[in-house]
Image 1 (cartoon, rainbow, N blue to C red):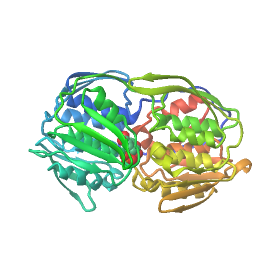
Image 2: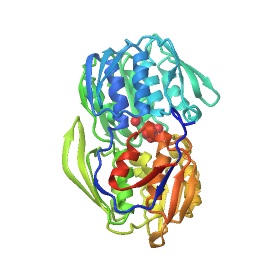
Image 3: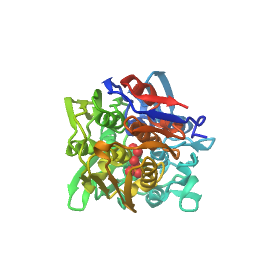
Image 4: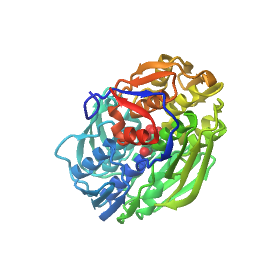
Length: 448
Ligand code: S3P
């Protein structure tokens, strides 16, 4: 079974040029945060462009369980009547975050300094993922947590009744951990400080500022020092969610692989903590134009125009770029399979603890499609098939991982023989319209 629905095998066949304009959904990271910050504000937050993927729907349900009133008014248009910082009620049932690491980790942070208890669970993928990275700093506030061995879900968290502020240096480059600590810091007196040696996506900082919190960010030799003053009254906001660069990555890479393609993707976030894939694609020789650069909802956005111009060249991806493209390595790996020469991706150990072990999932899937790869604990090298083409002709396990499923379906559009995934169901967690939108561009995708 998929996370939330029946198993859906799907096959991608070699396709003609991809043409047209594709409206990818709202940003997943910002959608989670809009619901959570809306729930922590006093009054009604309005959200337009919310991603209505299962991950975000699970966060909406969780916010209701903690006492907020969350209402859908139309496609992507939602309101959240918040209960204020420290105002969370105790949920009367287990919080099921489905497939979403972002959802569970941010919500644990948001409730960690309010004296309520909550039990969290998820699907088979989420229940394997490490939560200690979040509960370790949360216990410094006075929060208590009991989970399964290795800090796995299901887990019960008891919020601190008398929280103390925390100063914490991130041991891993993780926006989820940073955000959990900052959200916990909201209801601690005094100043909570997070130091991140490597910058990660900064939506929480931007949005906290937008909701009226006092937050400063200073670049220092030890990294970015983020200081949040606790116990603000968050003011409700109108949030316009930009389109998700991580979802845009799939049609974008497909267009760069399928000969003759010419597509546009409007309104995509160009936040510099998220745009590493697009810099990398340009380094590989891709033709990408960033048109109408502007600001929307506090985030830089642009209309992307991508044209196939021929085989791209393999490169060594700068490891310092990893955090800004962490979710894009699976689709980059399939694009690299079609390139000329090797693409070397280093410094990507975090991929081993995503919705699946993405280094292993990509390596095994690419091998099954006739592509030569090598891997280490924190790297993946893909030897491009170039003009000879990727053989394909395999069914790949999607391992409850939406990005693995979408990546291999994109590869199937150019491989010599079709590529199937055993279950495309998980795609609904982040990009429910993927199949229809890709078909509209000219992709031959078939449910088996
Ligand atoms: C996210 C942070 C990243 C990313 C995830 C979304 C977020 O995870 O992989 O899809 O919204 O904060 P890590 O913080 O674990 O790197």
